Length: 99
Image (tube, rainbow, N blue to C red; front, side, top):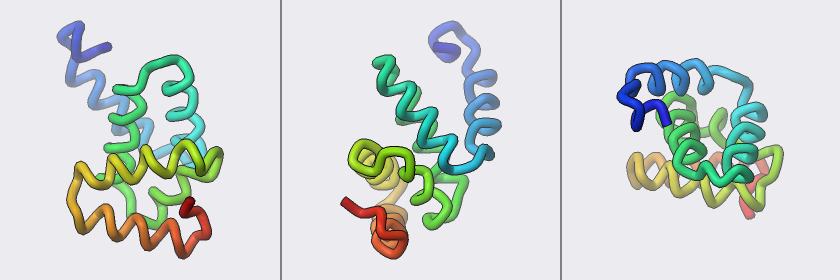
């Protein structure tokens, strides 16, 4: 929304601030955004999480609802790189969160 209003820098700053929250809070925020139909914002938050955190930390973000969040997180990782995607798949498996 901020980008559409010409406030892209503000939107990026909010994402950077949001991605430092505990992983479970990020997952809960994404669930809320998706429930409100704000899929683009949810994807942006997961993208920032995948880019800024280790695969192990990013994997913990799916804990609030693995069946919903695992596919979204893996899609975000796939957009970053094949290597990041596979690292995240491994981290999810090790954490027992893969579906």
